[in-house]
Image (cartoon, rainbow, N blue to C red; front, side, top):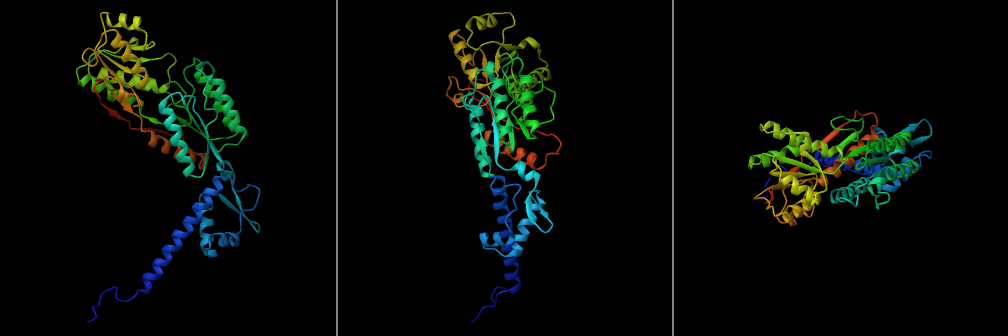
Length: 381
């Protein structure tokens, strides 16, 4: 007995629909491949783009499919037609082609930036870009400005498609040093996205895109956690000439203290070496001794834990300590460190996507993309 079902016979309309879907997928695949080739700098701006016939042979596709792929590239602003001549790269495509530069003075100096730059390189390569990281032997603090400016000159000479820039810090003239880098890149109309922080003093904002965690929120979150656990007298430990990201964290800590009805004073921001035993002995023996420290990053917190231990203070029984970044050392300390975890992979993906969008649409309004950062609670608090 033959069972009749709606699918017993081939439906010609279904075959037509399926074939149409295959064609759509084919032209999008071709467009994506050609886009990657363009962004990788495989085509010269002055030369005619390969003809439809040549592309049809290359991809084993029909001329209508190739036409649709080229229309997609024109819609994205990468190709333009010249009457009677063919297709050519647009000015935007010429600027977008080639490589992305990264200027990060803390690459190979701070674990967070090492991971971030490595992730950025992976993300950019997936989009068809090579990545320039410059001289990874970053200079000492005194020469950061000159190093960053020289790297900017190198990228400008190579007509790099765009640059991801960690603003210069740890020097008194950090604002002017970063401004010089931006002027060098701006003279060649090279798009820039700032990493981790703005270069203008917090809470001012520059006219450049920014990708970072929400440092104010992160500072507030970790301070509120400490206050909820009974802390009433927090200090924020940092180095002199600290960056805007640190200023945001301090602002968050201060707001959490005020919201809890606790005092916050300017002198509660301590700019001292975390290994200075004499300084911390005086601080902890004073009338208004702190019962908690929030440190600018995990290495600072690690050194502070050693100092407090040498002074016979127990953590968290006598005093509580927290850091930022969730570096590899945080979970290995004694006691393990409470910290804010940097979403490194998401930061890298977002910064690369933002730079590519800025390259393709240079007239977009400046944007600040602030990502949420998870607090990791461990025994130090």
